[in-house]
Length: 296
Image 1 (cartoon, rainbow, N blue to C red):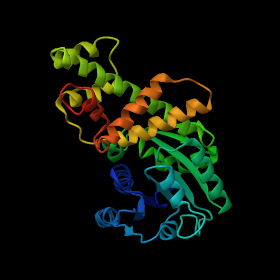
Image 2: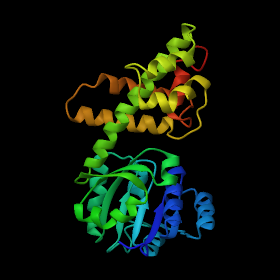
Image 3: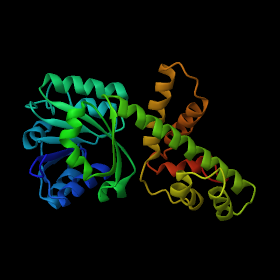
């Protein structure tokens, strides 16, 4: 697929906007952007020379390949609505790449709706965060028809240094749910370990160093450990998203007939974080529930 293909984005928050910037830098024609928060879309449109689309149908009309980077299942269904303004209006021949972390069944439903409109879809489930979206170093897990993946692979290769085709629609979302299940369990566990260390009066810099040299080491320790200690919770992956994704994984386990006590406890901890008004913090903010003298 040549760089002359027209590309549009629905959902231009921290991730979507940086993906659009990246593709623009790589020479692609990013023709239109849309967001329910119109000022964000308008600002990005001015920055990259795209059209601020007033409707979803205008996005579809302006591009060949449309990325959706929305918040949750409800938002994804809304942009692929069966009535009213929708990406499905005039969608014949279009390719939709859906990057949000969603319930796997939701991806299957969106694929069904798109097929009825003569379009195709691909899951583009993302690991990594904002800097990786900007620099084109995301870990992308893709699901859908293999021929669709092959068609858009040159575009995706500009966003990812680790591009992985997982399988049929829904399977990439399953894998992403498991990635976030393990990550969130590790995050909550690290917060408890460091919180207990603080309660015992231990030097937390020393404790993090010991963790890094033992079986307590993890990627989460590298990304979140110092932030937990210093209460530096600038948002790269929010507590609210951790709560949502932990719920997706927990439900998958329940549907499979499995008892996943750690998944359940982690879900409750991030739910508690959200309930206490901390959901806008980075997931490292779960430490606010475990350190002595904080929000616990």
